[in-house]
Image (cartoon, rainbow, N blue to C red; front, side):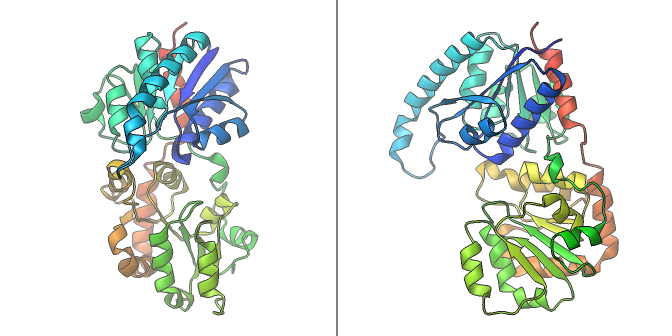
Length: 367
């Protein structure tokens, strides 16, 4: 099956956009002449990120339901109808062999219309517990690629493929030479290292937890590599500017993510699907603090998929300010637990996710 025309739809967050672009790159590598069109949501980050990755994108005027009272909720039915009409026009004109949905507002109307028009559809579900939209779309999808076990109860067995999530290969370490990585990052080459990553925007709970115990960390004999996020960097600068902290190294964003992973002895993170998939390949001991501010509590479910296999430690967001740093210190001195966590999380990594997803795409695409 030669792929010539493919539509990929979804976005809204990096956790949806990166897998979409990774899948597109895999298709393009095998079929250089393929025409790939993205369909996203107007005003969302995919409208900027996808063109910067070298792909065409068109936008639907679609939004999600706002939990708080908002006038936009009254307009939602009209936006859905207009998005369905526009998606139908786009699909009929482009005539794709397959339509791929990666999650996000735009994937709903796009895949609904593709199914009605008889175009084969594939869902790439990043989380351990699917959202409502993907559960609806799955009924008509030809194939569903997932990253976690035990989703047969949601999707059924016959069209399920355990492929894993596409990851940022440029963010993964090529080796585990901690000393070299620490030198590159300006860290002490000899000190055991804690890496706390709160994403590019930051995570308030993680930042507050570290700030509450900053002197304990400074005097622990360990060093901290801390990505605080662009929303919080100014406030943290203000709080720490008068302190002479030699073992605390923080910045808004860490560009050299592969070196950060490589330098770390343990890693503390939220539990977004993309981060968890990367961490499974990195293979370091991890503590996950799931964000409570995501739909259907996806992050807790992602984290529990690892915790239930003794591949991660979970600390609830509500408990983190009191318990996180003590949990970090306990893990740093427990080498046996570190070894067990590393061994178990590596078993969950899927190195060939994009290749396996492409194999499934080829199997369902129309001639």
